[in-house]
Image (cartoon, rainbow, N blue to C red; front, side, top):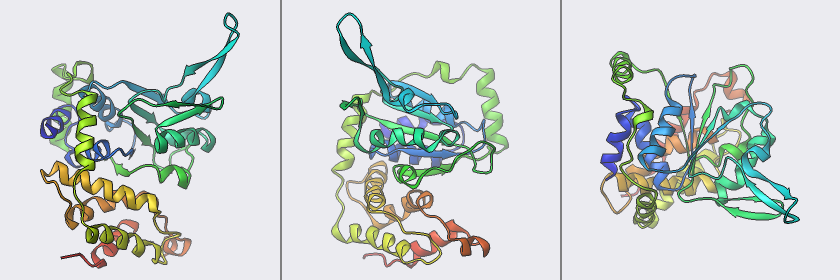
Length: 305
């Protein structure tokens, strides 16, 4: 079933098999994903294709400097007839959320997503409102050198299971995109091949994937390596370790296994770690490459036999 979903998405989001794989890993492990790239490379197409393929309720939040937290969380409106306050839903009350250009709004507005992403609920007027299942945030981010962008707070980036970079397509991929457009194969015509209930059932199977204590310790040892690396401002959090473990379970599930191997941890680790780590000023001056450091740390970590 997952192979069918993967192929269906790739019919519309062309040439990015690695991104589709990691998107499904986040979906099935209950994580959220951050996509970085220049405008027009298909980030919105990916989110919309996933939602329609799963027959999930889709919501889009276009972040701008004047976007308010109430636009996202919702607000309470006084009903003159009943004499009571009523909750008016915000954009967050959907199953698949596209947080478009999340770094174009202020940190205050960005923070309105924190509770939803971590606890699956939102609080308005002292009342808690549960979000629909499954719930997933797919956020897009413009490169930091673009005009009008804000740096995402550490608390926000830590709630994304993975960060992926969507680059330009190669020639054959771009030709295929043009053919799809000319043949009317667009997101307007996507058919659903699964349901939200199917996703919930698969998520249960993913959480049941076995992972031995020594493999958990392997994930924890990778985290410890980042915490002891002087070129990083700080190491990854315990939340990141949990994300690493959950992502490895989904990776194993997509590979047709009911148990996690160290290779699963190693495969997902770069995507889970990179956005959570920041180089020190000295490392930046020395033009150190963050991704290279992460790869070396993973390779230096002893693999359980």
